[in-house]
Length: 141
Figure (cartoon, rainbow, N blue to C red):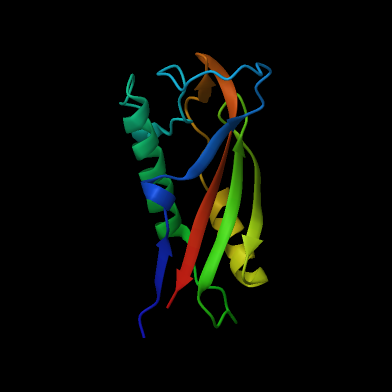
């Protein structure tokens, strides 16, 4: 039987939001907001949508290559992993926020911790910002 892992992207994008902003005004999304930029996506400069797409695809590809089926895991399911990037683009926190199984949660967190740091941090209002995203990881056989 062939094992298959899949990373589900909600609405063709990761559930993500910029956090840690001191400005409480409701400001519309602008081109001055961006996700963290991995080296693989460094060629994209001024297109926030293309950066988001590249960010999502890079994470999906990384997890698909890194994820392993945990020994003793018998059922399929989904794990939601939260990843926090600081204002320098470094990954500072990775944790499971919801899971169907502890072994699956441990493996999903382990795989996410192997992500490289971003070469450029997320921005908000043109300034470096922390960035929080939740990645749904599905385990299927």
